[in-house]
Amino acid sequence: MIHVLSPADGTLVGTVADEGSLGVAAAAQRTRAAQPAWEAIGPDARAGWLFRYRDWLLDHDEELATLLQQETGKPWQEATLEIPFALDLINYYGARAAGYLQDEHPRPHGLGTAAKRLTVGYRPYQLVGVICPWNFPLMIGLADSIPALLAGAAVVLKPSELTPLATERAIAGWSEIGAPAVFACVTGAGEAGAALIDVVDYAQFTGSTATGRKIAVRAAERLIPCSLELGGKDAMIVLADADLERAANAAVWGAMFNAGQACVSVERVYVEAPVHDAFVALVTAKAAALRQGEDSARYQADVGALASPAQLAIVEAQVQDAVAKGARALTGGRRSALGGTFYEPTVLAGVDHTMTAMREETFGPTLPIMAVADADEAVRLANDSRYGLSASVWTRDASRARELARRLEAGSVNVNDVFANLFTFPVPHAGWKQSGLGARLGGPYAIRKYCRTQAVTESRITPRAELIWYPYSPRKGRLAGRLLRLLHARDRGRRLRKG
Ligand code: NDP
Image 1 (cartoon, protein in one colour):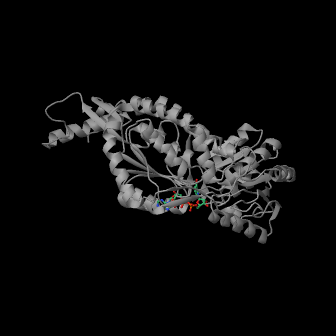
Image 2: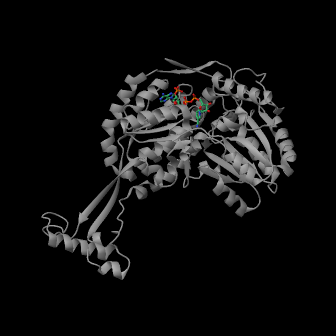
Image 3: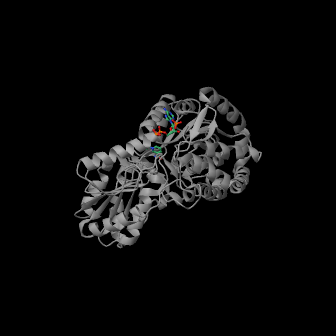
């Protein structure tokens, strides 16, 4: 049995079974058995089930948000954002799945294959395993599962043992609407996650780079594909001509949202020297004004608790390391007097790249800010990281912003906004370097990534034998050679020269 505790005050919120590898195997067997019929009903019928599921989610949004808030310690406002994200996703991909999965008929690429009829079809992997972290249990779990279900795959999802309650309830809703048994939740610890990778045909993981690497190794051993959405150390670059008020508001929200426990949170800021002091003053005042606390009274807190004592220890160690090396905490810089796993919203000035706060993923409510001479230095420092998830550029000069975006080593760049790309489904969300493998969403890619392509090549003209088949002979060989030369050479001399 797993006991789920409130990070805010340590009280028991609920329990779930510790299903282990046996539970994983049973869920895999059940969902695999149901998958062929699920694939056979076609994308429109599958979308129909997802639209019914959307309605169930809407009818249970308050219940799900309450569970989420209790198990994660999020403010109410943030707990209510996860379901709408899933609804938007169902509407977007439900309406497009059939189009994305339609057979394609590319034209033959040259005269040599002109008589072929070509088809590329999309056939789903039978079983997709989705492993989720504790920071956005429903949003991430559903964002990865919905496209897989629309593709025609079955899905077994393992939520984090820290936050399994809302996910288990949400997936119970799939059975409550009477949908085919192709979507299952298994609860358990990391061991259940590892067992899941051993039974699926495709692994979709979100979490730390360390665990992601283990999953990639196991997937390689089994020769199954995996897609990894890992950590980030996202940089924000503020140029001297930026709208400082908007940039400061975004920096504070982007760093403190979900208590900083977002893969795409603003983890470090580089500000051009002429506006550094003004920016820091704005940001410090805004961060100091944030209300922190347990938010069951709703809309009374802006920043919640951290997910676990382990997370609190990481944040505390990074801030202490920075201060010991000369940084200044302009606000916060310590555990909150509220107790639990609350850490005060913290703005750090005077930071540099010798500090873990500027190099390691923090995943906490901290905002380290560094002055830079110019945009070139900002880009160089932003790229000086083993991570490459996302970044943002702040300037009133659109062409400058685009030019800087191209120089940043990050899968997503937002201009005058923070992580807006997450809510724009047509673009992919991909981590570069140690931030991931593959991508999430991105128009057709979201669904097609869960499919194998199948090429069907039909011969429309069928002589007894093709020119390059048996029997081989000098006459046929010369003829084939001349023909190929004629087709592939691009100048008269080479076309006509004898082979
Ligand atoms: P993990 O990567 O360990 O946890 C993420 C998920 O993986 C959880 O569901 C976990 O299950 C599961 N898991 C753990 N071990 C295995 C395994 N061997 N095989 C398969 N699944 C496994 O994250 P941590 O909780 O350790 O967090 C540490 C750091 O990771 C954070 O400080 C943060 O920097 C980063 N992180 C990044 C996230 C992101 O969104 N990019 C999300 C979460 C963390 P269980 O919880 O039950 O052990």
